[in-house]
Every structure is written in structure tokens, then in C-alpha cells.
Amino acid sequence: MWLKYISLSIFGIAMAHLEGVVVVYLRKALDYNENGSNINFLQRFPKKYLLIERTREAATIIMLVVLAVLVGNSLFDMIIVFLWTFAFWDLFYYVSLYVLIRWPNNLKTIDVLFLIPKFWIAPVWFPISISSITILSILIYLFLS
Image 1: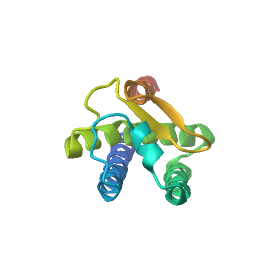
Image 2 (image 1 turned 135 degrees about the vertical axis):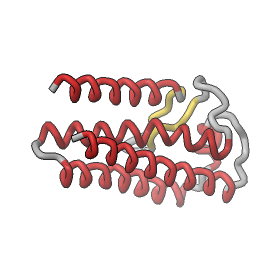
Image 3 (image 1 turned 120 degrees about the vertical axis):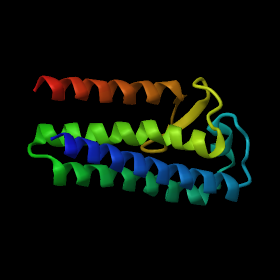
């Protein structure tokens, strides 16, 4: 069981780094080098590419759902696998961005968390907290089961 969750963690971390690299390239391609909020970046983001970016986000969720279906043994296990991998992906996305470009410069920095179905905007501490709580909760569940 632990090998499964360690492997899912590694998958989530790798997926997070890949997404972080994509964001770095998008910022460079659009000549956006500010360390502030991504809301300004979103306002400058060409509308024709916004749909493409939404499909990338949808694809990442589909990848996590398919992984959960392939790895999970029951519906409940599939949900746990999805949440576990999602939490590592989301948490290490910010770690990757910080390592690559030193963004965000603090946990109060406002970020655009998702583009689908509409824009989700919050300070960076929010998704980091939710992901951390999710990982800790699942660890407690796994230790107690």
C-alpha cells in the first residue's frame, strides 16, 4: 500500500513540475516577469489562448481521474487516490514555481487557481493549506486503517 501512495506522490510532484515549467514558458513568451499577482498576467493573456489554457487544465484533471480509476480498488479508494495525487500536484506546483522563478514571493500573493468553469482567485496560502490538510488527513486515515 505504501509503495502505491509513494508512487502517486512522485507522479503528482512530476506533474506539478511539468505544469510549473509550462507557466514559466507562458510568462516568458508573453514577456511577463513580474513577481506579483497572476491576475495582472491573466488580464494580459490573449483571449484566443485562454480556451487552450482551459483545455490544458481540463486535461490535467482528466489525467488525475483516469489515474484514480486505474489505481483505485473501489469508488472510495479512487476518490482517495484522486485527492492524494491532486494535493501533491497542487502543493508542489507552487514549490516548483518558487524553485524555478522565485514566485510566489510570499503566501499572501494572489493567484488564479483555476480557469474552469470560471476564474478561481485566492491567495497562495489557501491552496497550499487545503493540499496540506488533504495529505495529512489521508495519511491519518491510512495509518488508522
